[in-house]
Amino acid sequence: QQPVQSPQAVILREGEDAVINCSSSKALYSVHWYRQKHGEAPVFLMILLKGGEQKGHEKISASFNEKKQQSSLYLTASQLSYSGTYFCGTDASGNTPLVFGKGTRLSVIA
Amino acid sequence: SAVISQKPSRDICQRGTSLTIQCQVDSQVTMMFWYRQQPGQSLTLIATANQGSEATYESGFVIDKFPISRPNLTFSTLTVSNMSPEDSSIYLCSVIPGATEAFFGQGTRLTVV
Image (cartoon, rainbow over the protein chains, first blue to last red):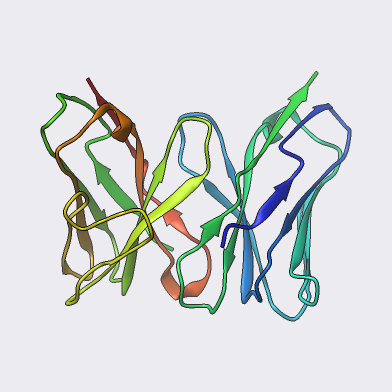
């Protein structure tokens, strides 16, 4: 079942922050986050495993609430290079293909 | 990690014909996944290809239309058969070695005219 992402699109000025949410109706083993730029393949950002953890990568971090089956991606002090479409991908058992949300189109402007 | 070589990168095909897309991985993986991504849309799983067994297709995708081969642990092909303009899309193969991050081929941009 496809996870639900919100918002669908967001426009930021450089230096602003954003939060992208991903929720599932079923129990999850892990949540992945990817960024895709136009004409390119998705690029891995991070993975969060059940156990309710939070991870960070420079100014991009994420959390996973296992009880609510929700994950959030936090982008702080956004840069122009952050522009792209962000997808969450969910895995139900650790041995299943990823099911991707519909994506969040992020545009960072100067 | 994994590096995937996918080809062709793009093609323009006549309706009614077939196109075979190839993916070569630089390491052995148990499962390979095939996705379709229509312009501005999400990635939709077509099927999972396992070596030595029939591929597992998702709802809405059938073997006659999208036959898949998986002759060994590093290679897979997806054929788009009897194409129509509705098949115009980007097709991506993907692997998840070690159940960590997913790696993708660069995609095949297919246009059916």
